[in-house]
Length: 28
Image 1 (cartoon, rainbow, N blue to C red):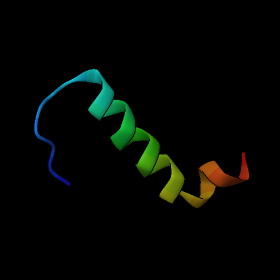
Image 2 (cartoon, rainbow, N blue to C red):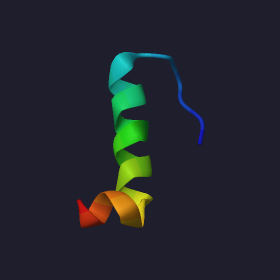
Image 3 (tube, one colour):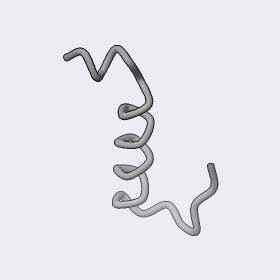
């Protein structure tokens, strides 16, 4: 995954996407 910048908003979106793809996070 690539981002246009290093803003906190983009990092939060990336973390949210990763967590959404993690079945362990879905169970919690």
